[in-house]
Length: 333
Image 1 (cartoon, rainbow, N blue to C red):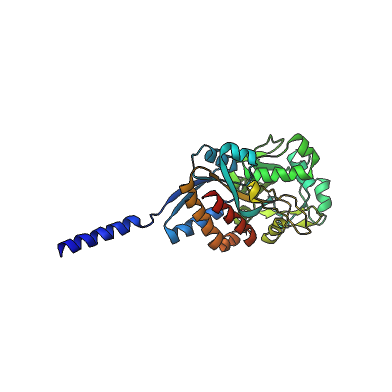
Image 2 (cartoon, helix red, strand yellow):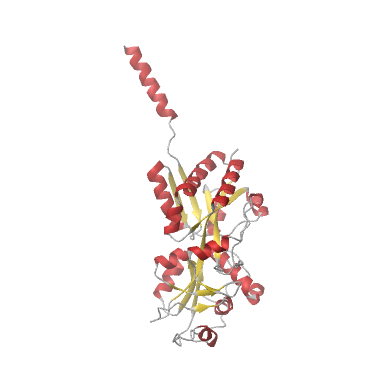
């Protein structure tokens, strides 16, 4: 009897040892995706007891930390070219799409402004200085715009949101392309710096006369006014799930180039011109840890779309998800 008890206890102990233990993965980077990844990780933990920690430090910080192997994965709104991925020994894949809103704070104004890429460019170049500038008034004849100084607000940290915004400006404004260019960090001709999407949103919210660029979820969360923008077809479009999704129709997602794709200023009658994707970066050599990271994002693909939509992000299409999942199967062999 005693021998049977010992054997039974041994079997139970072995079974417990063989059970899959909860894991912990650490990521950092894009503030663009932070509201979503927070909700995803919370729901994922409740269902699986696996923990995903994520720091909202900006895409530049995420790229740096994953390249230095400080974290398990980085998130960036700026896709990396193959040469940079090879140099840092990283894999890359997209997980979500969203857009950048042009937000502003003009006292006693609740209407949505109409702005063009050229006007936004000239504001950030310091050439349009007042809200009642004739170029803005011409687009908004029914709005009584005040004689108020415009204060452009921009990111102070390395930012994928800045990459998307300045890439857009470089496409619509030759002077911006020649003098400033685009990247996660640029030499700004004008403006007040703030850290993170949350920092820009808070500064605009608290100060009259300001204009800034933030991921759409931050504009909604902070109840900020945001503008109509002219797209490639010359149509004025508001940021929305539908208009971001229109931009993705022109994306050519290809695993052979690690899904490198920039979604700004795409064709289409109703595309929003400042649309972008968030990319996950993982070290090539950490296969076991990468399996855990992929488990989290696979869960997000399968069960996280409703969360994404509720926070005003656009889930990847079924076809694109399949391409990404096939890519995962290749990289964790």
